[in-house]
Length: 344
Ligand SMILES: *Cc1c(COP(=O)(O)O)cnc(C)c1O
Image (cartoon, rainbow, N blue to C red):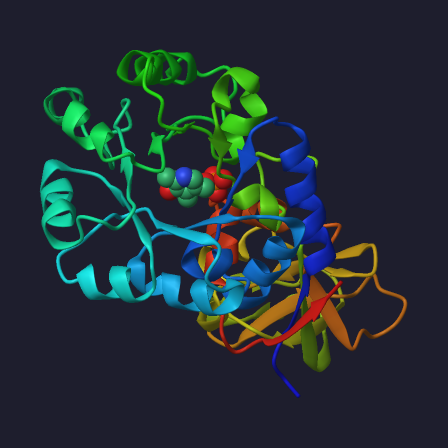
């Protein structure tokens, strides 16, 4: 078999949820959008439900189907993009809870599904999703009378604890919501780590569950092993790969492993990345191509059968640094050619 092997540690996922939950005295929901950040929403949602998670967030209504099938009727599944045109049937059929973001969405929801639960999102400065101050002022009384399940907002810079945007958005959220009796939610993973004043009635972590920063204490959840297809010896001066972008400065033993940018390992990661044989790093050399990556294994004492590109030594954020990206993007790009194994 020449596909990469993706191992997903459900015990680590559960432990990460428990660690984050232990930081708060409020409810801790789980964000499982984008197929649970690429790790498989069915297994992830089932594992988290067993830990006691009762509220799940997806981005799009369609994503709610897999979560509903995984966790049954009792859990609440909230849709962050709200009630879009064409979503009425799926919201009703799957008993989803849209988080309404605009006056248009509020009108659509109240007209189409007046008795279906909903939440509201307010914009506190990120300017991405949610009602702006004027719209909120116009609609708050009417909307709150219908008892939304949550009033939430989202922090733009929570991964930078000292960023002035954090206390600014906290202050705006207070000004927009103090005095209401509806449960409030502001914090995702980053916000949870900023301290209890950011927690309100519910936190909604995503990336921290899956082992990513800014939750530095997270246990890694994914491991990715790539099988070695071929090994060869180069003399000093020989070149490797497309564009001859790497040249051997010494006699080099070179392994080619089976994975590439078609599997979500973007070409931008080519510079400076390592693959690991146990605890020994081996430099990635040349360009990542569609289905193959070349690795300098000269310093290994034995020929490896496979090399790891995600492992305890190189978690998602460490790999991401090489390509000036983030752990989120590494996870959600994980390809569908890998064989997947769930452990724990
Ligand atoms: C994605 C998302 C989250 C989860 O964020 P993480 O940084 O992954 O913890 C929470 N709330 C909203 C509105 C989101 O879009």
